[in-house]
Length: 582
Image (cartoon, rainbow, N blue to C red; front, side, top):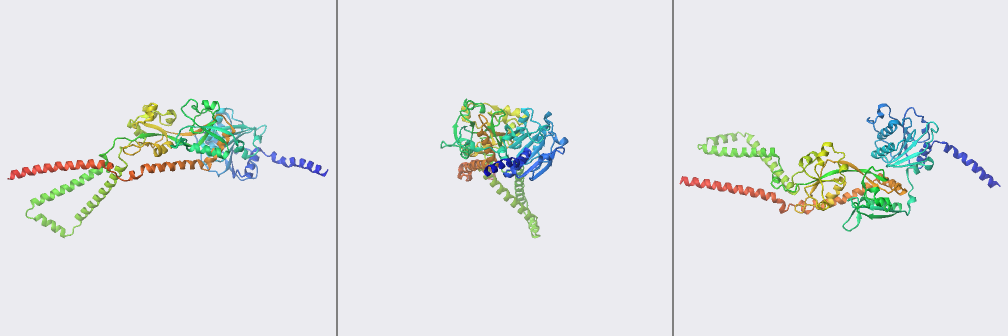
């Protein structure tokens, strides 16, 4: 009997003890749960002066920041930024901002831009009503992507009926949107982190295609690359049954990304090789890192043999050297002339008397001439050695203006619109006039006179690892133009939004946070640099060979020929003088 009484009392007391907790506003419960689970270190509140601060109640560390006012809310205004602590929760109150004319959207974007280091911190956006248009949410997602913000929850409130409880929530994580009731996410960890245990043993099929260095086939017929290793690691950690299908990207089955035939019939769940971001509203996972389109310019194939002996000095230095040699030769002729005219030796006696006075000017002039001669000879020999080793080609263009002036043709890129989207209008029109179409056979044997458009990350690997070298000179055939054409972001396409996509997105973001993806890139870069050192700075690259001295042999032959002609001329003149005297 007493046992029944205790159970009844416990059932009556438990709701009474739990009632104060659930009477707290949803946001307060969420924040306190974040501190209880060590998911949050500090909360930043960005609010207007007219808002009711009762919504921000609770016992936890917080920092209050006054929101933007007046002209600072304008989309073109510039506002001072601030830093936030790691593992923070930032709450932006925009409930007093009207929805019409996108004023609330602009205010939220301006406030988010004030945070200098968003990183992996969490953001909660409070609004009066839900965004009435899907386009507004699309703009918000694009802005979050550009700012590098991954964890965002939008809480729409009703200021009249329920001012302290949101009607629903919208979770946006790297452009992936989910709308649900607040009761679906009782705590902070559940709201911002997805449960990966639900994927244990799931069968997932991913498509890989040849896209060096992200996924490619090694000489041993094994697949490798950043994307291959990353997805393999994710499948191991999540205990997925991941099956890779190695496909031809140009084929009809796997073309068009998320709208390909393979995606529509669900023969593959996603494309494991990254691709450029395309705003087609298809399910995709975005990467935070960015890349750049660059022009890869061919090096002139004509060897610059003669100029290699002249290039160490510019024209002004050569004129100075010629003037000094002329003065020295002229002084020698004057000395011989005065020696022939001064038969009595008066001039020689006068010069000896000057030397007896120990006048230092002649010695100073001689010392300066010797030092200058030594420096010029040493600098010339060092520069010539460097030119004979590495700089045997004519220098090519260094920026877009010089490239346009050089009249070099460009192989028309597959993504010509995306690659030139950020180039100035005038330069874009001139570059498009250089586009030439090449067949598959011609692309298999690239013309060394054509430039082409490529991603900087790919060129960084190709120029070290796989880019062909000239068989005669052993030098690289192309170089990277320093001025980029456009920046680009990458994505992974999915057939549909699934739990696997959500967990993969969360896991990918963690790889970005802890630097794992960067470590993978660095490992590939180390491999590429080793290949570069073997090919560029090997025994054949640092030691002068006989073929490297062709410029020297040519100049030496020209010098001997000129000397021989002068000798013959002097002998001819001397023989005529002897005949006349006899």
